[in-house]
Structure formats: structure tokens, C-alpha cells
Image (cartoon, rainbow, N blue to C red):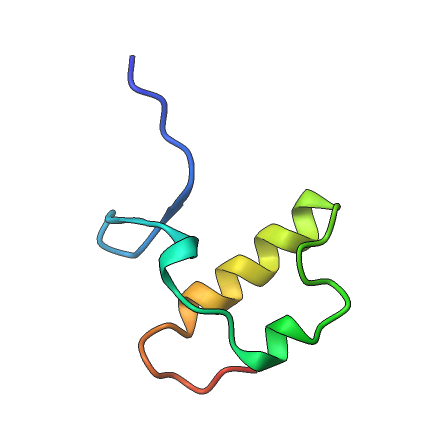
Length: 57
């Protein structure tokens, strides 16, 4: 059985967060590369959701 994990877009395409640059806002954030996996995952989801030029907040 194939294991499914990682980040996917709405069409089911797997996304590699390492291929999308972190905005300056992320790099200066105290949660950047957080040891808490949940914080890091939420930040990555937010960054990937804004990858197509939407305003990043």
C-alpha cells in the first residue's frame, strides 16, 4: 500500500515546500523552523496557499 503524506494542492498534486521561497515575513518570524511540528506545518500551509501571487499575510 502506498503511503500518502506531505502537502498537496486542491487538485491532488504533491507540493514540495522547499521549491517555494520563504517570504521575508516568514524568515523574520520567531516561529520560522519551529521545533513544534504543528506550528511549522501551519506556517508551511499558509506559505504554500499564497504561492500563486495572493497577498501573503
